Structures are given as C-alpha cells and as structure tokens.
Length: 311
Length: 291
Image (tube, each protein chain N blue to C red):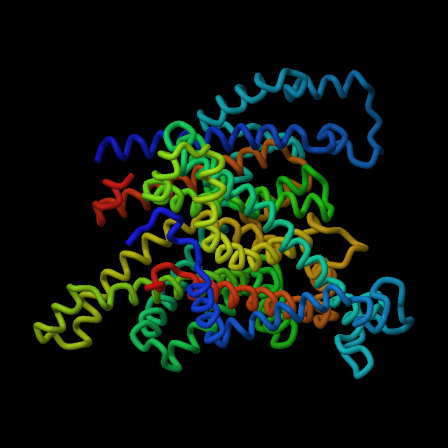
C-alpha cells in the first residue's frame, strides 16, 4: 500500500511539473507584448530605455529557462509574483480574493447535486423501464446536452428579466449565487443521476443482494442497507474524478454571470495577457485536480483492494 | 472458443444482429434521423435559408420578435435570425467531424502504441494522457485559442488536440488485453511485422469502441466549439456559428432575448440527437451484451 501511494504521488508531481512547463511555454509564445499592453492606447509617452527598464525589472530579458526556474522556485515557496496588468498587486492576493466565491459555488452545486441525483438515480434504477425511469433518464440526457452558458442565459431571461426575482449578473447580494449554482447543479445532477442509476443496476443482480433477499430480508431493507450504501460509495468516489470538469464549468459560469471567482479571473487574465496570473492559476488547477484524483484513488483502493493489485 | 483468425472481427451475422438491435432502439433511430436532417440542412443551407444571413439587413426591424415571415425574428442588426441559425449548422458539424477525426487518429495511435508496447513507452504515453486528463479542458482550450488566434482552423485543431486523451485511454486498455490473445500471439509467432499486427489484428478489434466513443464525443465537441465562439475565442464573425449568435444574444439578453433562445435550442437538439445515436450504438455493439 505504501508503495502504491508513493508511486501515485510521484506521478502526480510529474504531471504538475509537465503542466507548469507546457503552460510556461504557451504563455511565452502568446501574441502581444505585456509591456505595450500595459501602456494602453499609446497616450502614455515612453522611451525605449524605459521599456527596457520595465523588461529588466520583470525579468523578461532573461533566457526562458532561467525565467521558468525563477518562477517555479517562487511558486514552491508560495510566491506567485505580481500581476503585470494590475501593477503592484500580488497574484496570490488576487487569487485568494477569488477563491471563496468559487469554493462556495462548487460546494453548493455539489451538495445540491448529491441531494437530488442520488435518490432520483436509485429510484430510476429500481423502477427500471417504468415512467419514473424514462422521465428521469430523459431529463438527465437533456441536462447533459444543454450547454451551461445557454442555460445561464435562459435562467437570466426567466428569473431576472420576466419575473424580476433575481439579479441577472454579479454578486451584490447572496441572491447572486442562486442562478449560477442552479446551472452548475443541473449539469452535475444530470451526470450523477446517470452514474447512480448505472451503479445500482450493477448491484441489484449481485450475490449479496440475492442472498439477502433469499434470507427473507424485506425489499425496502435490502435496498437501503445493501444497495444504497454500496451505490453511495461508488458515486461519491466518482465525484472525486470530476474535479477537472467542475473547474471547467466554473470558468464558463463565472464568466457569464460576472462573478468575481477564480474562473472569471482566469478568462480575464488570458484576455489581458496577464502572464503571472494565468500561469499561477493553471498550476493551481492542475494541483487541485491531481490531488483530488489521488485522494479518490486512495479512498477507492481502501474500499476495493482489487484496484491496488491491478495497478 | 477461439480460432486463429481474428475471432472478434464482426461477421456479417453479428453485424446484422447489431443493426437490428440499433433499429429497435427508438431514441437512437430518432436521433439518427435528426442528425441526417441536420447534415442535409448544413449542405443545402443556401437553398433552405430564405434570406442572406449577412447581407440582408432589414431596416427598422432590429431585434423584432418572430413573425410568420421571419420564423425566428431578427437579430440586433435587423438580419433574419432563421437564416443565420441555418448557416450556423455548417460550422457545428464541420468542427464536430473534423475535430473528432483528429482526436480519433491521435488517440488510437497513442493508445495502441502504449497498450501494445507497454514498458517505458507505455509509462511515458500514459503520463501524457494523465497530464491532459488532469487539465480542465476549457482552461486549456481558452489558453490555446488565445495563443493561436481565433479562427475555424485553430478551433478544429485545438479541440482535436485536447480531447484525444479519452480515446487513447480506452484504446490502451483494450489493446493491452488483445495483446495477450491467441490470434495476436499466433500472428507474432508466424513472424508478422509489428505494424502489420497492429493494423490488421489489433486496431480493427478496437474500432467498435472507438466508433461508440466518437459518436458520444461529437456532442461534447459541438458544445466546446460553441463555448469558445461564445467567448469570442473560437470561430469569428462574419462566419456564422451558434456560439457566435449566442454571444450576440448575450449582449442583448435583456432587450432581445429571442436572439439567444433559438441557437441554443439548435445546440441542445443536435447534441441530444448525437448522444442518443451514441447510446444506441453502444448498446448495439457492446461486447458485454454480445452473448
């Protein structure tokens, strides 16, 4: 087991390293010079020497591998550098300000998704090929096929424009969370429902369920004690593997609803060519996904030793 | 029971059984009919669209709601929205097919190499696959699209280059088990070259999984393309895309909501249709059900 954990951790470290190198290279071949971007539309007069001065200050004149090593070394000590666009503001501070919004958004969405998807998924598996199953399966298919940015726009039209119950954009009050959480939860419910249904359908014909039935345990009790607990384990571990997708959803939803979270910070920084912020965020995303997958793998291998052996 | 010739290669009998199973799935057939319809719409867009989607600007009709003559109303500049949406079908399908093709070729090549050769090659390629899978797809797409500059070609390449990892993972797992099968060992023992074994014996046996995966992934790709175009990082105007029209709709969401409604319905319907076809293919071709 210890060996398995060590190997998986090493793999994670290598993956994060690769991602940081790739991102660094991508950011440097990006069109547009951040120095000129900073000067805006040319209203600020600046001499060639001053430009050189800025480059030297930012280390943009040094060789690429040196820039990478400096940056990576700083990252390891938790120093993400300063924003190139919002001058003087530490990247760490910008990210720290954005994290709570994103964390809350995802927390609410996942909680809502589990609350809805588990019971519905179990119901549609137990009542397979009845109207319950057909209805939930259809809506889950519909949820998977609906782009989150379009659903966002439609909810804005209905709840902000016609009913005027909720604000269309921004986070001036807690009500600003409702529509974005609804969008993210819809996507998660659609996927989780399908996974729960599949997990339960696989469990129902298994020996321990049959044995329990044969022993005369009542149908409801079999369902709750034996099927439900096993399905929960399967589904909760599967959620761990969905972190990359969750982050993708966050990026789009925060951008459409103009929420000051990590996802919007990312799109804004890409558009503004704010190297420092984009690089840091990409590495943070990678670390989050790798750690989440690692934890999920470990939990899974503790529950089901077969996984460990086959790896 | 195994024979020395590729036993899993679909025989005519098995193929007709799969076809019958697919045709018995009502949703899959409806999906297939809709997908065919959309292909026809894309090909014959100039014939179907009642107006020119870019040139015909009707004065005094900015943001007019749907009417009997303009089924989806006018956009924010007074152009016929129905014609614009019809033309948008082309880009959705072109990107869906072209990106899938790139992803399938890359994914099958990498997955087959990793699964067949194993060892260091597998360790390296698996790391590559894991790295790509560990990345939030949208973040990578936004980054690459911004670097390469938005256009149809870059959109196709960028999406193809990012979604292949899923194919590679599936193909790798299947090839690993195929490698140990008797008909592959026999081919090896008879001295066939590695490339020949892969192309003749191994890859044909993973194709049904790849086809199923591709049909399920096209929907995702169509959504990714429209997301990129929606953010202004995908296919750019004047080329018409559903995502691009949605971006117009977003800008005028509180004044002319219908601009955003119709292209979205088209995306949902098309993606749903592709997913139903994919589900149907999976159920029809799934080896577990082939008893």
